[in-house]
Length: 175
Ligand SMILES: [Zn+2]
Image 1 (cartoon, rainbow, N blue to C red):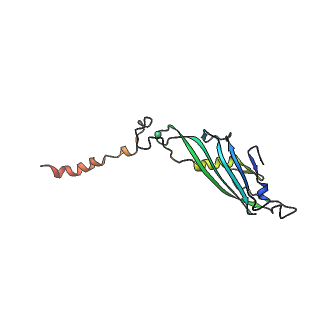
Image 2: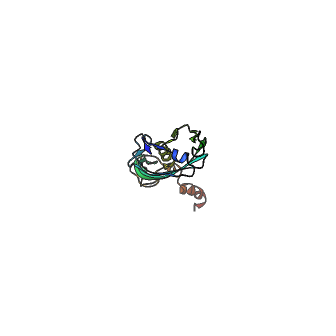
């Protein structure tokens, strides 16, 4: 059923209501945007209504990110869900002698070759969507991070609140 990273979804497409469920484990050999330290593992389920194919899945992996404050390396678990609907054209072959259902490809970034899901392309998309936007190392935004000491904090550029307070008080408080 699965060859060269392709998952043939004809069984679901030609038999609306039939569920295809597969366990997935991939090293994501072509992954260039995200530094994975463990294989991506999880499962995919696909079922067709006749004119829509619904693909759902859950995955977990581990990846190295960059701390948003200090740029230091940061290894994190990553768990994500996939839930995508794809339009289907044609009549499923269980209802027609001379036709069959096919995925309508709409994406700029192709996820299908004919009725074969390119599993790693779908997982790649799921990874990108679910990456933390501003991951932080153990020091967080305020901790005494050795890497971040030389990076000025936005907050410290403002005057200390007590300075402006003493300016207000000074003229009145002279004895
Ligand atoms: Zn950091």
